[in-house]
Length: 240
Ligand code: ADP
Ligand code: MG
Image (tube, rainbow, N blue to C red):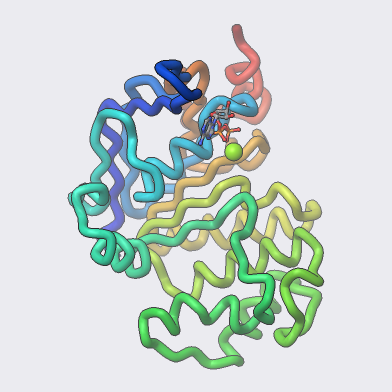
């Protein structure tokens, strides 16, 4: 898998507060991520991490600047082509899971494949969930599950599509320590096998285990850290 590249060029994002008032969230950000790379984005709460991930993945158009996903600007595409690109090239693990509450576990996981008219074996999904120490039935409705179990369903739903580029917004926010390590190992393995993985996290221990940690502050990438310890990353986040 050699494809899997995201380029962020001078991206700024501001939100309208009504009238002529706007608030600047991202300020002229540039960086890129490629296949085989596991990148983390850290920063204080409210610093724009989720906004950046949405801009990078074709969910939220930047106010200015450019995004290229495998050399294509997602915001130049017709909605149907953007949807297809998102289905075939991108996996997005949402902070809020974004599962369909009225569907059971298996149907949630197989939904993206059904949209692409592909089939999936129940045993493949079972095996995937077993590896994640999933503790519920495939027939359970997802709104009856704990946050941690819902997160595993959301991750499995991304894994079954084998995306080249994976965006994960706080994928370990709601899980226990053991599940956190399992989820991290899955993302690490995907990157080692050729995917481009971009993870937002507030967990500096996890960030220290990625290839590169980008520290987002005041709308800008304050630092790009490689080989830094958790405490060094934390110091950078807290530095005035
Ligand atoms: P983080 O993920 O780092 O906690 P977010 O990207 O979610 O931060 O949000 C950054 C800032 O942008 C916050 O102050 C948030 O309130 C604001 N924000 C996010 N989305 C919107 C929106 N649609 N309209 C107005 N403000 C927003
Ligand atoms: Mg966020």
